[in-house]
Length: 261
Image (cartoon, rainbow, N blue to C red; front, top):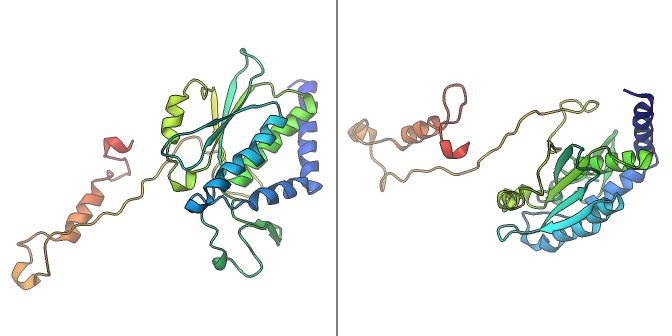
């Protein structure tokens, strides 16, 4: 690494640390936490859109990003695509984040804590969205800003996609990505949306995972049937369900349902 690059890196890290030590980053994150972006609450639709427009768009635009709102009928809120192009010869990095959170459930928090107020206890910050995902994408944006403030350029093209419906199944995300395939093309995709194994060291997951939630039930027949008379003669719903669940994967976890992979 050349001395110029090394100096730029150290300077950017120093700028990021100053933002943290001065309390500026905490104040920014506290402001974002105060917006109750509960995507599971239909009454929060306006707040979801406002988070993109009042918080993230200005942050991206201040760094020279061009921002475009994308939409889809399935989605309850818009998507934000931010883009900063520095050169056709440079690699492109696509980032991902989501600004929505699960329900606040204020009554279930410990005394003195609130989902919409950043509170520090024993060196830990509490508030809905700090760990998923306002904290992560806020850190990423701060890192980009620190690099730009230090040397005036990133050294790569940057694109960032932010959705507001991740906690409700990312409705419309697949369709938006397919419709904007070219605008989302990149050499590297970085999604910061997961826990660290250690607080003092970033965790890299080199792959993708997913989940499907569903209820599985069998209504085999009306009423109950005595096992002394019918055991072994008629199907047992419990056994049927056990076989249904077992058919989802092989013995070592490989998914056997083609439409799920």
